[in-house]
Image (tube, rainbow, N blue to C red; front, side, top):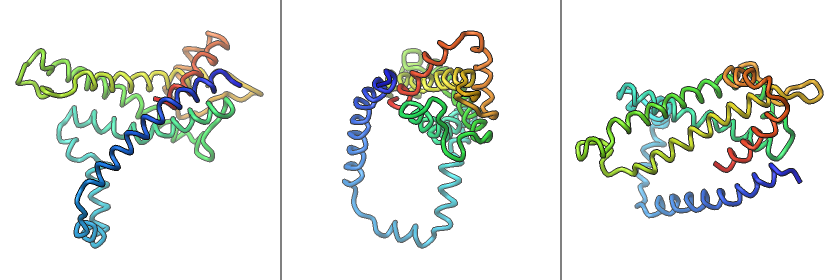
Length: 224
């Protein structure tokens, strides 16, 4: 059995139970709330307005965008979580299937590749912004006047670190795959993935080893 596949499955055996436990905790927490049939009736009675509100407030992040730079950073990070979900599907496909796996129908669509790379780069800028903001407003520097006083400092930096690793390794993985060909076709081929393709050009002189090493990202990403 493929070493990368074994490693990926082992990592998932560790990660998935942790995810399941957290989901169970959230489910139980929601169940502890009191029933509110009037609120459900209120939403179903004005469904069009409710959908519009969700689009504007959630997908559009209208309130956060009023915060200027931090608002934009939150906006890009939020959309990165949604759009880059497709990259996780790609990672699972490569880990469990062929090296040139692509999402059926839309996998080679240039618009998808462009959205994935652009939002990933925007998220990279966003988490760098968060890091700088936290450093400049840290409780160690401002004391009780810090906006982050009492927050989980280590946990926040750890989350930023994990997101950073997922993004840069994604570009490395896709860039390397774009330079490795089987039967005349690249393992990763999407003309819209401009950052990944640029990374692939930088890696073009490193030889076949670039694919084997960066392929490990697939199994690590699926358990991140």
